[in-house]
Length: 428
Image 1 (tube, rainbow, N blue to C red):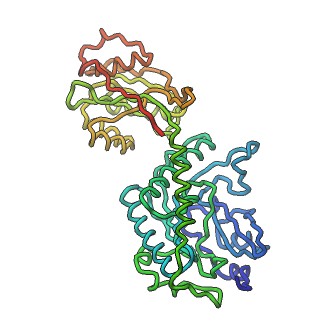
Image 2 (cartoon, rainbow, N blue to C red; image 1 turned 120 degrees about the horizontal axis):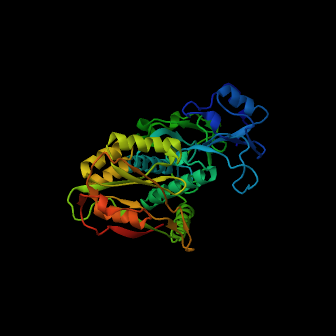
Image 3 (tube, one colour; image 1 turned 45 degrees about the horizontal axis):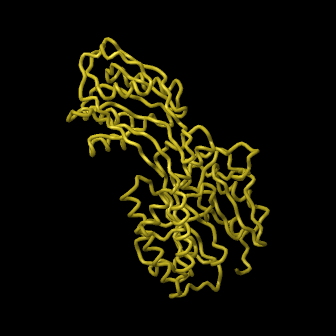
């Protein structure tokens, strides 16, 4: 590192925080020229507040959190059991692609991998690409926004963060198994920091900055010389031997640990919404989204659904976090698809269209220790006696097994046979 006045640079140049939805919800950290690490003691919402935050320091490398928090200042450690758990508002999906050591050849490999990974993500996930960065050294960063807000609606802050981490771990596992060389420490870590665009890379003197997808599609040598360099002796070698062994072992270690973790199973019972013995008849069964909660708002939505669709009979259960809704009526598959779409449950409706039925959990979840949790408990029946309907024989029987008392003599028209389509499921 040359004798460079980083402090003066940042007082005269702007870091790039404009693309962050609310930078004041991100944590900012930096490494000083003497090796010390510092955290921002104030919220960073603009270039001006950023300059005030670093005013006493000479930061060689600047980072920001991949997560947004209700209060990003002095976040407690994960091991801190005394402080209230911080409230996670968002977690960007981030991939860090590096090929070591720094060379034009390795940068080109990193560029190609980054481009292929982005195309793979587009084909397999509904994520919104919000930024691409050249790191200022050996590779690139991809930033996506997860448009599914379900997990961020979990009320308990610790459970919310853990659920997001688990979801990201599944994604990272799929990316690594697909053969993409990404840093396995980044994507699934809600407490991770990553280099801030618009900041100088302390080792290379090159500017970490955002680039367009069009730039990423062009080979490295066509644009790398245009990247601002703040050290006079920076020269990127054309060739350098890639450190395959170290990075390969890092990925292999991660996959091994994940596979060992995935050997822990949970067990549950699921039921099909199809009416056995019929061709095109379904019951309407679903778990409400976490974002609906289990209070007044949720029941108002369910009552609105019952009135709008003229449903005659519905049973409601709760596992304490969500509501299990079972309408044992005989309904056409097309109508159930429409209802689910109207409720915003596109994945479930797509399952029904493609596979002609779907499975829904109707039991608690049993861990390997034999203990059950999240067991659905019966709450109430919503019945509209003025509306006559045809009912699913098998799903009425199912309700009796779930503890609901049913007088079958009151149901004149029954559809399908009594054989229930249930299964025991083992999940990782």
